[in-house]
Amino acid sequence: MQACPEATLLGHANYVGPKWETGDAAQKTFNDRGVQETLLGYLTDMEKIQRGMEKARIVIGKAGHDYDCVAYEGGPSGYTFNATPEQAEAQEKYGKSLAMGVAALDAWLGSYEKGWTYQNFLAYSQGKWWSSHTAFADGFRPCPGWLAMTLRNRFATGDLVKVEAQTMPVLSRGKESYPLIRCSAMRDGKRWSVFVLSRKLNAKYDDQDFGDGNTPVTLHLPFRKCGKITLHKLAGDPRASNREKMTIEIQSQEVPAAALDGGTFVVNERSGGGARGMPPGSIYLYVFEATE
Image 1 (cartoon, rainbow, N blue to C red):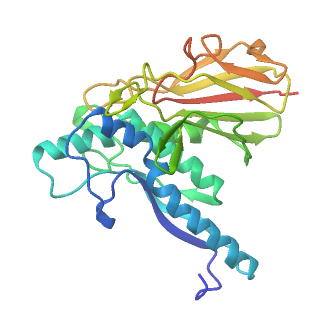
Image 2: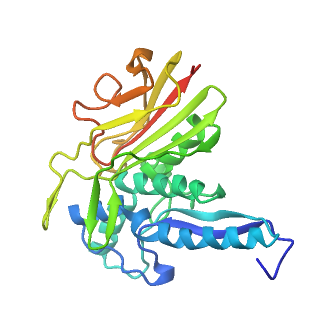
Image 3: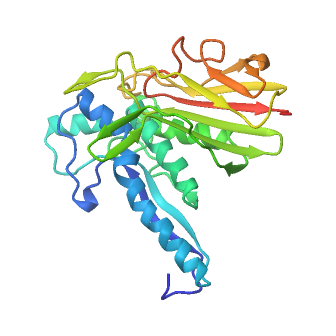
């Protein structure tokens, strides 16, 4: 960018999951450990890379060259070309899972927070590897990663606003701590779009036990009441995909406006969640309209 002062966009591939281009080791077997790693895929890899890119953009911007970071391609990954049939099947299970859909949206939202603008999905196509859908002859069913993109594009509008976490469940590994919930918000006048993502799996492996995977979530919003609340979500077994049948779909429902109580909003059965909050490996998008 310093060598090309006329450039206004810096393109980067924005994938989650192991990447063959950088020599990452792909998953060879499909298990709960791998699904949990998929849910954390943005935090354990791409987020660190983007942090450095954000710092560079700020430094170069202060020197007089403003530009945006963009994704010329990206989305669900984790595929290799030299896998055995068993390994290839495991990679397809990860790449087309709801867990990968969560990770992909996690990456897109996290990118916005670091100053990214345009982001492209690879690839709108049919079949295996990075394809968005099953074959035409097999129903042309969308993968959860494509549905996560669809949910964001159709229902969320406005400018990104800052979200602060007062308390957050985390997964600690040595010096690293990974939050198991993401909350991101966008404002369009009196219309607010609030994303809640669960990075937690209902699983027990090694020395980790996440129980049923549910997470209590309370949102403290900058408005006290609203005229309408709609929930759009992708939920189900995070291990599941749409490869054999349409298992994961965007679900939309109206939520009682009274669920917003003086600026406090709890994810529970009344607001479209579970009795114990956010279900494991899920995506919720709450749209609050006519806010006051």
